[in-house]
Image (cartoon, rainbow, N blue to C red):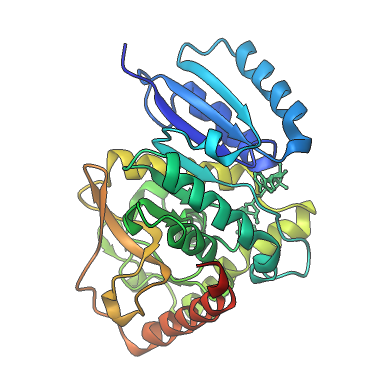
Length: 325
Ligand code: NAD
Ligand code: LMR
């Protein structure tokens, strides 16, 4: 039997975590022979909910569940964590931008960054899902000086998946026919879903897709998909977000296929002329648990303008939370 891995999930009583954690204990994240200890963190008023969730986990009789920790203390939640899903944060409602959540959610991530710094494993993989995810990840990173910036990431995998699905439906091809989608920048309405490097069955996607559809429909559709779901459900996306969180972390562990990459919001090293010291979504290839930004892609003026716009928003968000660094 392998040694269990410790996986922390914050906002464990919320809707995304509910869709995420049962898949984790079935082996969909760490593999079918890897035991897990799940650390569930939420606010003090949610402890009874977490006890109920633990009862349901017991009732799954999963052979992989090696233990459960329930807590409202981040230092208990992140103790020895190998992976941490930072989901807990307020979601936006109809008519709000994700950035509107910055002042209500930012402090959560400075506290949790400090706790990760103190008690998590040195190699902990941190995924921030709570919005505004990129800047919350930057706050957590800045409060964790003992960890490397490479430990921290934010989620644009949902946007990446949305872009694949939209392109497949438009092009009437299979999901598996598509490769090399990119989401650049912020998980917000300024993100730039880029098809210039995408392939369908090995051929440039834009060869078979109307450029006007790409420029005037596709981009804004992906940018606004989260709001569209909120308008229909009255709540933000949950199952698709949990699925994307699981896939993001799984790619980070097992790597990307030779002929593809994934989008991850990570600490910018200045690649493609994007400002350093931001959490910006890039195309990355992953091997042995380590990600590298895909280099050398040709970028035209249309793309560069959009990459700059979303960069500008992230710089503005960073300025708004500097007091927490
Ligand atoms: P939810 O309201 O169902 O759950 C949030 C949970 O977080 C609640 O149980 C709440 O008690 C808990 N929480 C609040 N403060 C906390 C703290 N300090 N410590 C621990 N737990 C705390 O919300 P949800 O639908 O699960 O969404 C969670 C977050 O994820 C939101 O910010 C939402 O906007 C974001 N989100 C991001 C993406 C993405 O693609 N990056 C996608 C969907 C949702
Ligand atoms: C999403 O993209 O679905 C989430 O970020 C939730 C939201 O606020 O749109």
